[in-house]
Length: 221
Length: 356
Image (cartoon, rainbow over all chains, first blue to last red; front, side):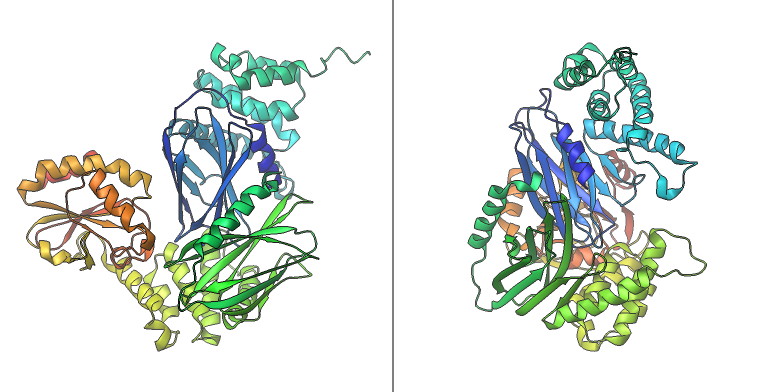
């Protein structure tokens, strides 16, 4: 949970998207029939916004006005004995979320960015499963673990090769660059991004992080 | 950091106090929750079909939170979502909101909670004990996974129902189980353990309707009959449309995908209405959403008959048709047999073109 918050904080609002368009969020979960649900995100004013709702018969809904900027949001389903969360893009349209308590079955759908994010997450899960194949289940790496970051970066590269104009890659790089201090590896992927991605708020953010890292030959040895 | 926004929490509280107008049958409750020293605040989320949702903020004093209010005569649950600022962690506990002094205590071992103080919460605590003992136990010959968990869950309800056949906790647990588990025979084997009084209660009838829906609401079977009020309060029955091809469309104003589907329905209605085709819109809107339901029908010019008992997912028609998500629809032939289900987009027009 704590780590999810950190990811959310790393993904600040970005490029222009849609002026005052409505979103509806329809969620399904098999992990609870009736319980509370929290919907939250960091708005364009950098303030945390949140709303609570109620899961009824495994369903919940929220609606509102999307922002001009690209924003990530999170829902947390307060099932028992544990809660379940999912990150997604808050964008205009009918956002559909399936929270199944299983990273393979969790789904984001219904809107363009969420479809793209879902495809990325699918690739990421497959790569992580391969990475963890020879590890004990108790020692399995999550996407947040520092040792998993080279693999995540590789996934971003693969994703960008398939979708050179997608913003998903640059958004994901913001998280990786915060943890993975390897400027050449990061730059190699960053340079694959198109001009729009590089000049976007996230692109500038990633480049700034990379530029702030000590270069490999500056150790003084 | 996120939950440091006490302003928002306070705003919730102000809204809640505004919403919680006293009803004649309301009775007082107090809540005393010892959630551990690290928990400094919590959000109390409560919902009832008649009163809607309330949210209240609670703050710990010496590790204990107290709250008091009024509760109506519906049996209802509430949830305390706690926040531990020191560790930036959240936890939650579900309990019955009922008249009397409700006590929640964090267990000294593990992450569980003990519920006490009122009848239903004492029962729920017993249920949780059975649940915790059985859900963690190894069952020989079974692989781990969701199905096993759900099988164990039914076993928990069965054991509890045997010990407490008259407890509403068993009834509610079975009602929740039946939402996601479409095995009428398994559900009925536990349902039959419950007392006659519970089975004839509104929730008991709800489970019976749901089981009936699981068995009958499929293509080739006779369409389950229903009778619901239209927008003017006049009762409308499915049988009123016998002899026509009827699409029973389950939708709700809060359902984005349902609204996205409306243009397809309108096109089909305009094209085929004169060819013995009718649509009955069954809304799963909430009791407090009648005005919105009427507004959307008018705004979007949904000209076909619209009915709803405004009972959300507990609508009798939704139970009889085993509806677990919306939009959902059933195409019924002139003889009252279900011909097809869940015809979306082009599929509806294609099907209608074949038969009309």
